[in-house]
Image (cartoon, rainbow, N blue to C red; front, side, top):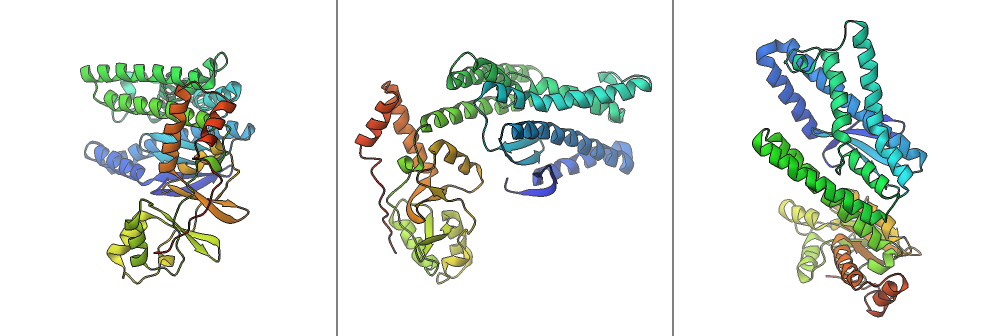
Length: 385
């Protein structure tokens, strides 16, 4: 995630801290400083660090369980609102998804149980009213936090773990896409309830409601797109008419090419090989800070994914989860034959949705796509400004 700092690796998985998390620590320090002094302020910061340590263990529970099912986790990022483990995919096997979804809360159950035993040995844990005070007992707060994480995450609403548990249980009896839609609908109903409750009591619940509502809608849309992409390859959805540049082209030349058409990002070729991608925003920034005669070699991105045209389209969708990736070169035996772009994917999905509404299924869908002429064998249209 952009703006994140790698702080450690656990079991080969990078753990990152987003810069906004540091703002949270600063805010906690300032809030504790007037009433508790410097020691109390550092104590408050230490509690937050410990809480997020539990969040990391929670996400590792998901990641390590997913690894058992050959699902890699790219990284874990800590945000002020919690942690995010980026998995390459969510398995469609209901039992596997159920195990992955339950693994995170299970870690918090273990942590809470261990802390309860420790606190019971020294007199018992404090009640909720006691730990609500600013200087409340530290370990008690940590225990109750893990209880809260379990309860909150098990709510049957995306993007919480409970939403995935609900989908996994439903997917045992119905189509995966339908199960996702039902789980998303349940989540959105809960979001409306949270919003109404927030208007009457705590405005923070409105933020949670928005988080849940958008998360549910996003999950349903992602699964719908993945379902449409099944059975197709990158070749079926890529752009085959495009312009390209060479490293020696200048910023001025690239800007004229940008204005001449609707293409936003440009592959950069050197002796027929893709060596870079010139992104529109990078070009705009360069125009404001550099001379027009500057070559694009110093502006283009040199780290980017490349797809073969025979790659499954469903698998290729995950490549766009990486920040700033909006255009991916597509090759055939090393030769550039097309571009897979977010914009063209949206158009492809719109066409696929329209055809699906006609209740075309299986081979009929593919035949309709092929007969439309939109999925003809790709030809590379390479232009120069």
